[in-house]
Length: 208
Length: 252
Image (tube, rainbow over all chains, first blue to last red; front, side):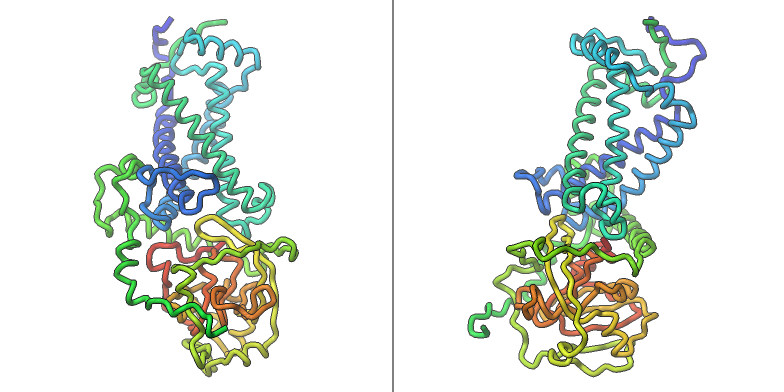
């Protein structure tokens, strides 16, 4: 069953792999510098440890944040355009039916969910679509708190500057939770890491 | 009031080495952190590395983007008096006990590309048409608060002194050692004022007495307190925080 398709498409196209790793770098810069910015005026009763920050001080962290945002924006737009134009989203991220999610979640929790490189199960589709939406929301709330006057309409959409700032923080936690789960699953299935680096043929999907 | 004034603070020159030690320009001082290691393994650790140069280049690009996004006609949201934040938070690059009293014989100096460089007394500024606002002050640290200021619209003042309105920068020098500068377009935005009053009372020293800039279209560090001079110039003037790495345009 795990035999690669002969002459089939790769599990992940070169474009997806390049955009994935650029996105990892850009999002890493945004998260670590964002923690340093948060620490300058925490809105929750905790600080991120200083050793996790990027930038060294508020000015440095903002320089990183307002630089890496362009990389993330370019990578994100390229990914969205590619995702629709190549059929990647339509083929791999079609919304699953709730019953599929329940079945695959149950199987995953019993460690019985089979991995097929190049195919996403229902739980993966929910998580990947969810993190794409979260990153878009993060970009929009980020723009709203960067330019609450010049982009006043966007700031009002999120309830004004202070609330948009809280949503930006909350969405970060959602993205970090995704990253932790994603990395944990990669540790469990290390061959998925290889398929995101080198060309590995997509596997046949079992018919259900 | 003057008998109870806070005692004069140390001069900036006295604390400058300490400030420099604490806040040395450079974005990589804490590179040996998880974020720094993860994002930039193996790069130069000096404070004037290629990475610093790259970040500064991108910040200048950000400034151009911000200038392009800025519209002089777009107004910051205004609020009802009931929305004013109380107590209002003091903020400066020094602690509140270091607030400077207003120097004797204070005047507001006018320099640079202006026709009339005569200094202004407080009485002369008070005689100009005044304008009030209740707007949100947004700190670069992320917190914000709503306050009420009134004073002379900066655009009206610049026209009054015959400033070259095609000049690029308006620079503000403060007697507490602070300084900042803004672009001419933002200086002419109608909500940019030389504030004389805070909450309908003459400015107290901690709120920037006797005269401060209030500019709701920029981050709080641009609203310089305790002004002593204004200069219209085409030469990039920088500012206290800007020279340490805060992004210059700092628009909101």
